[in-house]
Image (cartoon, rainbow, N blue to C red; front, side, top):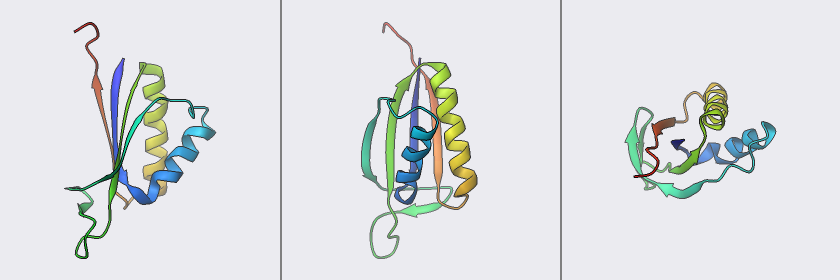
Length: 97
């Protein structure tokens, strides 16, 4: 089992979920934090007049095979939106602790 964390510009939110549905992954369980602020490789996202853009955060726990398929979706999304700020983090889950 792995934990996936997707941090992305809110402008790609709908596109991400559309791609999940197209790949048969619409039923993947997730927790969504709809507005997050920060600064990464695509620059600041602060939701204010200086840095008006905002990100969202998804956390998903799933099996390796599903995580691989979601990773492919994120790679495709990054190709379509190369300048939007999309980052995926994958962490193994230690079960039973």
